Image 1 (cartoon, rainbow, N blue to C red):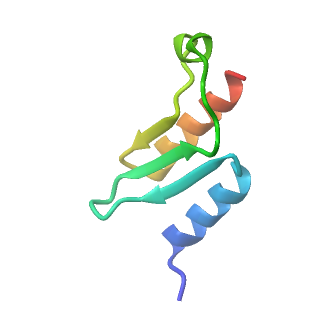
Image 2: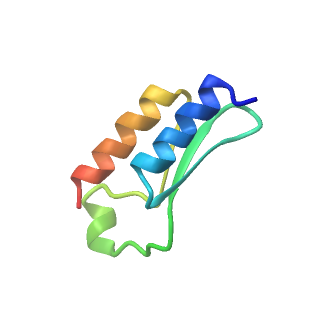
Length: 70
Protein backbone atom coordinates (compact mmCIF):
# COMPACT_ATOMS: atom_id res chain seq x y z
CA UNK A 1 0.00 0.00 0.00
CA UNK A 2 1.34 3.41 -0.98
CA UNK A 3 1.27 6.15 1.64
CA UNK A 4 0.35 9.75 0.75
CA UNK A 5 3.97 10.78 1.30
CA UNK A 6 5.21 8.05 -1.09
CA UNK A 7 2.61 9.14 -3.64
CA UNK A 8 3.85 12.72 -3.38
CA UNK A 9 7.45 11.56 -3.87
CA UNK A 10 6.34 9.70 -7.00
CA UNK A 11 4.66 12.89 -8.23
CA UNK A 12 7.87 14.85 -7.62
CA UNK A 13 9.89 12.23 -9.50
CA UNK A 14 7.54 12.66 -12.46
CA UNK A 15 7.59 16.46 -12.23
CA UNK A 16 11.41 16.62 -11.91
CA UNK A 17 12.71 13.64 -13.93
CA UNK A 18 16.27 14.99 -14.00
CA UNK A 19 16.44 14.52 -10.22
CA UNK A 20 16.62 11.41 -8.02
CA UNK A 21 14.21 12.20 -5.17
CA UNK A 22 14.21 10.22 -1.94
CA UNK A 23 13.69 10.31 1.80
CA UNK A 24 16.37 9.16 4.24
CA UNK A 25 15.74 6.77 7.10
CA UNK A 26 15.92 9.81 9.40
CA UNK A 27 13.11 11.53 7.47
CA UNK A 28 15.13 14.13 5.58
CA UNK A 29 14.23 14.68 1.91
CA UNK A 30 16.91 14.76 -0.78
CA UNK A 31 17.03 15.41 -4.51
CA UNK A 32 20.18 14.80 -6.52
CA UNK A 33 20.67 15.67 -10.16
CA UNK A 34 20.99 12.64 -12.43
CA UNK A 35 24.06 12.46 -14.65
CA UNK A 36 24.92 16.15 -14.47
CA UNK A 37 28.29 17.70 -13.84
CA UNK A 38 27.84 21.33 -12.90
CA UNK A 39 30.35 23.88 -14.11
CA UNK A 40 32.02 26.37 -11.81
CA UNK A 41 29.84 29.06 -13.35
CA UNK A 42 26.67 27.11 -12.56
CA UNK A 43 27.82 26.47 -9.00
CA UNK A 44 28.69 30.13 -8.53
CA UNK A 45 25.24 31.13 -9.79
CA UNK A 46 23.54 28.99 -7.12
CA UNK A 47 22.99 25.65 -8.85
CA UNK A 48 23.40 22.60 -6.62
CA UNK A 49 24.03 18.94 -7.40
CA UNK A 50 21.94 17.96 -4.35
CA UNK A 51 19.29 19.80 -2.37
CA UNK A 52 18.14 18.83 1.13
CA UNK A 53 14.96 19.70 3.03
CA UNK A 54 13.26 18.73 6.24
CA UNK A 55 9.80 18.66 4.61
CA UNK A 56 8.24 18.14 1.20
CA UNK A 57 7.01 21.71 0.60
CA UNK A 58 10.54 23.00 1.15
CA UNK A 59 11.97 20.36 -1.19
CA UNK A 60 9.50 21.39 -3.91
CA UNK A 61 10.46 25.04 -3.41
CA UNK A 62 14.17 24.19 -3.72
CA UNK A 63 13.62 22.14 -6.88
CA UNK A 64 11.61 24.94 -8.47
CA UNK A 65 14.32 27.45 -7.58
CA UNK A 66 16.93 25.19 -9.19
CA UNK A 67 14.81 24.89 -12.33
CA UNK A 68 14.75 28.69 -12.62
CA UNK A 69 18.57 28.85 -12.64
CA UNK A 70 19.04 27.05 -15.95
